Length: 128
Image (cartoon, rainbow, N blue to C red):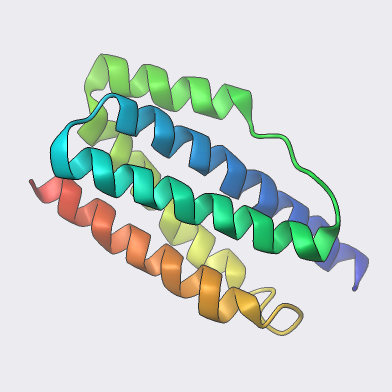
């Protein structure tokens, strides 16, 4: 694997585990359908992390600062506002996975498509 690809994978891996933790935090502040959707997205993000870990062979620590900031944002401005911010992150993740599809074909099927699905689900939560 090319060095810059491994660096990019580690960055994505850290982002996935961070987002997993953020979605779990937002789910803990939500109810009903929203809570279930956020928990399912967190589970998907953890699976993405695991897929990337298979390729890097390394663990990645979540970005505690980012988790704290999203949790604080949800507490101050509400979960919907925090979800809007997360939705933008899903869009950026989709674009990033395009850079590694050649090296990691799983990125196209498992990661890119699911990130797009997450973005759409988050948009639906925002509309409610």
